[in-house]
Amino acid sequence: MKKYNVLVIGSGGREHAIALKLSTSTLLDRLFVVPGNPGTASFAENLPGNVLDFGNIAGIIREKSVDIVVVGPEDPLVHGLRDYLEAAGILENVLFVGPGKSGARLEGSKDFAKGFMRRHGIPTAAYRTFSMEDREDAIAFMKTLDAPYVLKADGLAAGKGVLILDSIGEAVSALDEIFAGKFGHAGDKVVIEQYLKGIEVSFFAITDGHGYVLLPEAKDYKRAMDGDTGLNTGGMGAVSPVPFVTPDFRKKVEDRIIRPTIKGLEEEGTDYRGFIFFGLMDCAGDPYVIEYNVRMGDPETEAVMSRVGSDLLAHLVAAARGDVSGEEVSVLPCTALTGIVVSGGYPQAYGKGYAIDGIEACASKAAVFHSGTAFRDGRTVTAGGRVLAVTVTSGTLAAARELLYSALPDIKFENSYYRSDIGADMLKLSDK
Ligand code: AMP
Ligand code: GLY
Image (cartoon, rainbow, N blue to C red):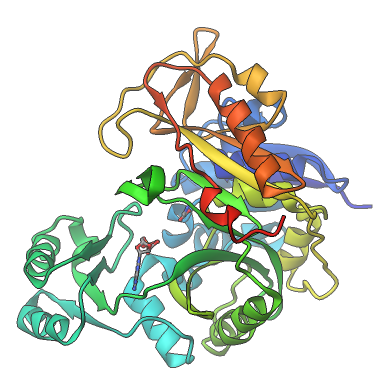
């Protein structure tokens, strides 16, 4: 049986969870992570480097005889890592999980993603795209919509490029700020769209460009504070499965969204092999696409991977080779819950370098993924806003919540904070 040397690219909790799952594969030979984190260091070989230093990544692939590259974050994909390695001749005998620049526009350009959905009849909010010269038209278009107003900077804006405003006055001011450079060139074009009312859920597919397999779905808790209040964050927690995802809803998602998306990519000549993350809104039982991402979600991955019973490496090898038809994802019948411990102040200014205690105690009850930590002077310290992702699994959502909230208090560092209501809103929907 062929064994694979695997290179995972990234440094967060998502990459930790992906790498940990890959580490259990019988197909694995050696596992490298660039740059990785103190968590991945315990079971994989961390190698230094920036995820956008393509030359360094190419060097590592050659030097370590890497067989397959798995990219965690969107940045290297949107900036063309796949295209770079292809042009260097490296992908002739190395597999690669993630789209090239062309496919990565699904995430890298909101205008492209909306146009793609329009071309392929994929349900999404009504919209128009404007640039600075069309300011008056943009305002006129906003006036045809009902409040609240949704404004999206076209390009990548570190997850901050979506603004939702309650009044037309605030929306016009926000539009002017974006055109004035609030998000740099990412805001050269602005998508203005209809507000969708409903409840959000994320689906994840691994595609070979023709077919796909689905990973378990998840729901992310984006707001900083309990009760979905406070500022938007990268995600404060996640739950999988999502109780309102019935077989009927899943079928609608596959028929109306996932299959048309993959067929659309194929029709447009985009050879897309990798993850697709469908950020959806369930509007009274009908799914609409809010956004595409060309990678897994963080913290959704930390919950999702703990419910995958089959061999992730086998699925990724098949997708990268171009044929997932023989793959079957087995989903464990448990509930996974992830809570993020953040550094107080996040998502605004926060301190770094605080010594972290209690990781071992917490790890006796839960999986502890490193999101923003560093190893300094023999200690693990905080190095980011989202510091640790704590994941538990249990037979029921109620039991998972109990376990999560017995594990989270073990983590101790100055000014730490976590939400106390992860999964609570799903309890009433869950029959478990
Ligand atoms: P994004 O950065 O695209 O994930 O958007 C951030 C958040 O804004 C989403 O997770 C939704 O909660 C919200 N959002 C984006 N587009 C819409 C929309 N058309 N209607 C309602 N909420 C939206
Ligand atoms: N948690 C949302 C994301 O990864 O985009």
